[in-house]
Length: 412
Image (cartoon, rainbow, N blue to C red; front, side):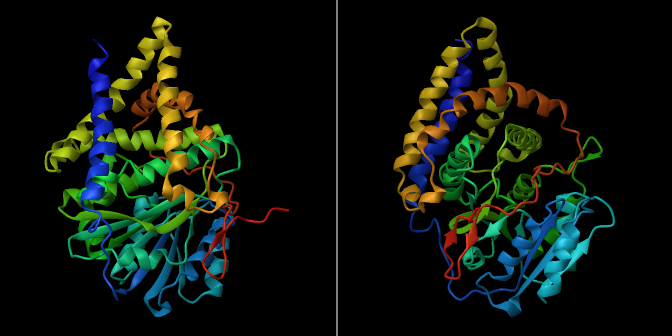
């Protein structure tokens, strides 16, 4: 009976994300992805940069080739005092394209302040945030701006694909994890037009909303210590709290590199865990303003995040951890099959798909992450590190053909 409340939280989260979320997407399918024809506002694409090396050059090239009127598109790279050759690569690209500008922060300020720096100098109506390791599909920008169908929509997020899905077992696992995170876990939020976390990989914002929220974004701290992680989630929460709508479309696509080793993967999970803990707790006073279903999900997710590690520890202490792992394995296997038969997955080119069996190691990684990373995240919330993803600066394993088709990179 002592674990019943935890499984109740799990059941509530499952109902909200998969049952109610699916119901809402079916109920509102005609309005879920509304577009406006002929809307072509001025756009500034902002790329915060820190130690990405050569890959920033490829990212800039992909941005310049976006299918959007050249006279309405500018690209601003904000280097946060990189310690490698990232700045030089960015300047090399800027020398080739007249609509590319490279700024450099006076000192290491963090991703959000770097974006604010660029926003303050921009005059465009729409600001698009793109991570420095991302390759964007040519039509993505058109798809994003077409979703600003009403003045109360302040942000539109895109769909993130993994560019190196078949590199090894870990990238295959993350490919399936990204699929559920993008196409299922946000269904409830998408249906209610209150998506609570839009990825910094590819999100468009109304510039006047970013200016309005700038004082809050600039002064984000924990007990007086500036926080540089979880900017995407924090910004989305602030937009929703201000009364604006946030939406997401699967038709604006980008490609990011998944961590190919456990060190990079757990570093990423630790960064996300800290963000979840801080923003869930800080946002509790405003949770009641959300739609009742979202409020219920918000509270249950916070409780699950904080309590589940203790449940895992109890199972370990009792010696019946493998029973819990077996339960996880059954659930993970079920989700693997959902991925395998999903029409949206089958529509992808073969190189972007992975075998569903690749998801099975999540039955071990998930409890380990809850057991180890959640307490570590709790005790390191005051870190002020930029916390890069640890990429080597290599180009993501994807290229874009002249006709807009995304192709795997050719290896020699």
